[in-house]
View: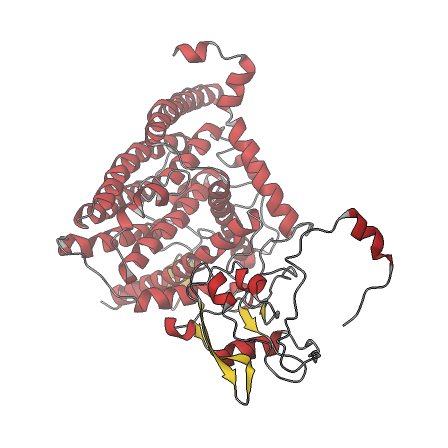
Length: 204
Length: 353
């Protein structure tokens, strides 16, 4: 064949002795010896159900409803999460608190987690920080409907994932709705504001 | 009459022992393969069933045994059922002529028999080659009778591949047969006694035949990198696509039994079978058989490890590359080996006088 006539002696010898195959075989046996004989190498496998990864702090897992430290629910039933949700996961049925018509709460609160895309927009939309993302992810179920979580389930999720609760702030006037505004949606600080940050932060 | 019954009884006991050992080996080879592959690929392999996954073959066997046995609509069910048997039986039947240990007679109740070989027929290697060819029918018929295009393609590939490479196996071992002057596996083993420099791969200068035999054996057992009939990424599972349950297990066992068989054959033909790599034996005369069996097992497992090692390293060949390699590289090499060995033996014997 013509292509063979241009081979040098070295190339020809390499082809005849399966040199390239031997190079590959050396690579695999090296790993094998490092693993079995020298013990200088270990598997990258994590034995998942027995061992689990450390999740990053910003992990987006199941969504939970939170409570204040006096066990009252944070949610004020404002429906903003429902409006923010791109995949229509959330259904809020809000109602007035009995005997306190200025205050509302979520009478029923459903999350259809089969549709959730874990984007976190509901958490950003919540004016009272009543929603949070947990690090839970093992939520496979046999019945798809089990993933339509009701308010007690969501509160239970929050209870078991966030044992440290925020203190409830009593507002000045009982008739004024108080929004515990989170600071994550504020525009970035100007240089003037940053220089005035020297004084100690105001603690709630 | 009594003689015949004792003869049959002894033969049956030997057959049962060999079958049990071979089938256990086959079962644990599946685990060994997965473990070795994972160790070469920074993985762990099976770890769940038993400590370090050691009972995985049992779990696999139970699963396959209780799986639903499906015969696809439009399949030729006679051939469909026959194919796994045609695959497995020739793979197991070859072990009848493999000598596992020293060829010495033992006397029991006045009857002499050889404990380490089921039967020493004088055309042993021919017998193995003949049954290996029948094994190809299992694959081809399984592929054809499944009524599935992937299976048919797998079967066709298997037909061409197994026939091409069987030719190379037959030619590669001719050098050994010329040197030993016998087709009996026991005689071939005995001719290589007295240290590793007497083994045919070194002493008989059969290195070309050895390499050709190894490569062709990998191709003949449809193992990677020559697993074109099975080709997961192209043909789903090739000729095994439609098989499930125990029928699939039969094919699976046939593949691994074939691996063990070609490894045994390679050990006998090229590495001296039960012969130790040093002259004589270390253990006393009446315990020498332990040493013989030990060296035989070491050699067989070396070849089996080679199978896994090659599988972990090389990707699958393209079909035309496979055919070109078989007919344009392996076949001329094997023929050259035959000619060189024949001339060499002729000249050597003339010089010896």
